[in-house]
Image (cartoon, rainbow, N blue to C red; front, side, top):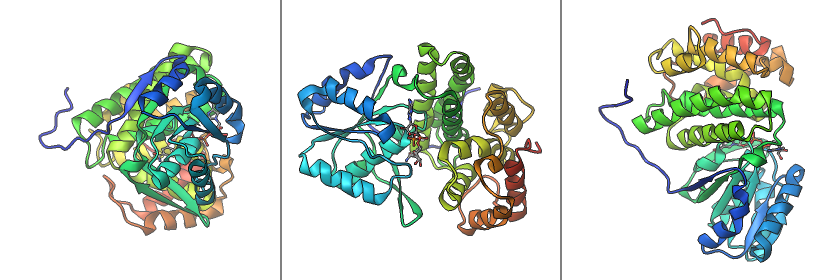
Length: 357
Ligand code: NAD
């Protein structure tokens, strides 16, 4: 069955994407192709060695390294890094890492308009979106701007090989969530649906192979392919219950990003499948299950993903406040957000129970 819709708007960003194990060795060519010659390399402290490798690969085209990228993109670090870029007279940023490093590159681009080359080492998908999440004084806010959209993405399977198996699984489920919610987005198009279905299929096929052999570069490449597709869906269409709930849990209870996504996805699917079973049919078909929620839950369990919010440190006594916070600011969702049903969802996700349907 085709994904034809009678009416739609589809908008894609102008992004250059290069794929291939070892493609990072072309970084100097990519800097030059942007018309740049003064790159600032970014990473987290944990990936400083990778940042140094990139500085070596860039040679005289690298003017500095900044290795303080931090989860949730704190504004103080972004201001500091942007000032450093100006001081160095950098003319582009090269962000090597997961969503945290990509976030820092975007935050610098937002402040300075510098072009970005992103080399993702997780499946978070931020590199494919014009979205920037930032935190200040304990509050996370999100903005969307074309300034923030990276110009070039290099997907190198050799760099994702070092991602530990546990993080590989949670990061994959994080990516899959973008595609799964994209299937019922109000502003979806046949193109975003095609990408969502293909992205989910790529993870279904490749993730078990990566877990069996984390050095399987073909399977690692296929998971990066899935991450690109799922991230592109996130960049093109609106998200709903799943992403809003994860945002609340991450922002207000300091729960880790990818793990929270990994746990909530099955429950968000089950909640929304009641309203739009036909739109979530690809999820149950690809992952094999009687419903989208159970298909994802069983896949996550088979991949040994975390299943319970209580294992992330959330207390049962926090659930009422989480339900209050998650129903405070209304947003569009295919099924109305009803507090009792949401409280039930949170209880099941907290305990690690399978969703009811
Ligand atoms: P992360 O970038 O924080 O990485 C987690 C840790 O893993 C870091 O210490 C990092 O250095 C390390 N790491 C990353 N890749 C590795 C590898 N290949 N080998 C070994 N270690 C590696 O985690 P993440 O889940 O990629 O990103 C989460 C952040 O991204 C959150 O702040 C989230 O809000 C943001 N995000 C933003 C968007 C967007 O569109 N704006 C989309 C998705 C995620």
